[in-house]
Picture: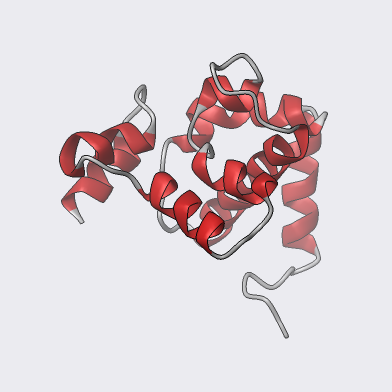
Length: 131
């Protein structure tokens, strides 16, 4: 858990860079390999592999990924932010690093993000899926 604490509190480097330094591999790479092994679509694989990669999410990185993968990443990062704020748990600095680009990908403003969060709280959206 010490590496998780370090990665969660890292303000500049990607989360995955901390894992790479410590373990020589990171959760995003492993997740993408699993997605491929399980024959998920490449769009999911890209979203998994690059969900901490600011240049790729912004569309200016060395790796070009489909727009839909960028949307998956942006939505998941926004959901993570909302979950952290609503539960006051598992705080990271990922939104500080990736948030502006995620909002750009989703075509929503900071004000709209705030409205969506307030709406989620007002509607008492369950923080666990109800199947």
